[in-house]
Length: 168
Image 1 (tube, rainbow, N blue to C red):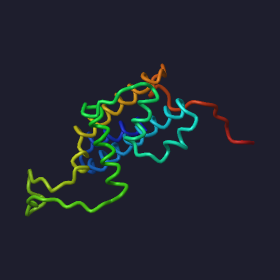
Image 2 (image 1 turned 180 degrees about the vertical axis):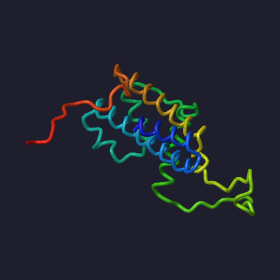
Image 3 (image 1 turned 90 degrees about the horizontal axis):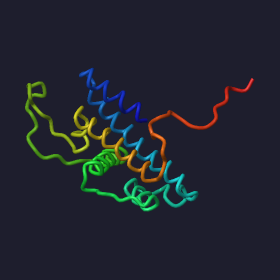
Image 4 (image 1 turned 90 degrees about the vertical axis):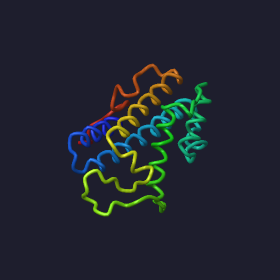
C-alpha cells in the first residue's frame, strides 16, 4: 500500500491532468497502509486483537496499540495530526455525508487563479498535502514498529510467509 501511495503521488506530480484523483487515491492508500500496520502490530501483540479491536475506529485502535507497546501518543504533534487528517478524509469518503460549504463560488470555472469551494478532505488532495500525509504516515508506522520491538523495516519487504505455485 505504501508503494501504491508513493506511485500515485508521483503520478499526480508528473501528470497535472487528473492529478486530483491521483492524490485522492494516494491518500486512501496511505490510510489503508496505516490501518493495516496497526492491525498487524496489534495481532503480534495480542492474539485476541481482531476480536477486541477489529471494529474500533482507527484512533481508538492506535490508542490500544500504544498501550500494548508502552508507547505514547502526541496527538497535537505533526505525525498524529496527519493521522487525524488522513482518517477524516477516509471517513468522509466512506460515509459520503453532505457537506455545506460557505464562500463565493467563482462565476466562471475557467478563470485563472479561481479557487472552487472545497471540503476539508478535498483540500488534502494536492501534491504538498498528499506528500506530507504519506511522509508522516511512514514516520508513524516506523515509530510504532520500533516501540513494539520489531527490528525489521516495516517497508523492507512486500510480504512474508511461504508462497507456493498453483497446484499441478
